[in-house]
Image 1 (spheres, rainbow, N blue to C red):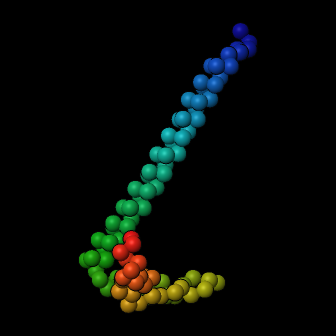
Image 2 (tube, rainbow, N blue to C red):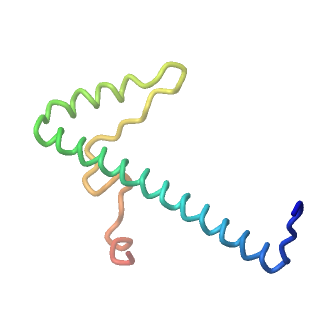
Length: 93
């Protein structure tokens, strides 16, 4: 036997199966990336909790910026978040 011809329905089912398999693999890879990101954030939080002086070092590092880029903007003393919210707007939220 040299050539095997599959029916249109069989080809369609196979392509749907393959598409679902690839979508599953992509979702798994996204979940792994998210898990790694959360693990990294948790480790950083744990380190900062145990060594508060690391936050000062990280702040100095952030203020240096990267070569060729504009220096970062630093916001200090924002009591209710970055953007001020009036009492009327808070009740609408």
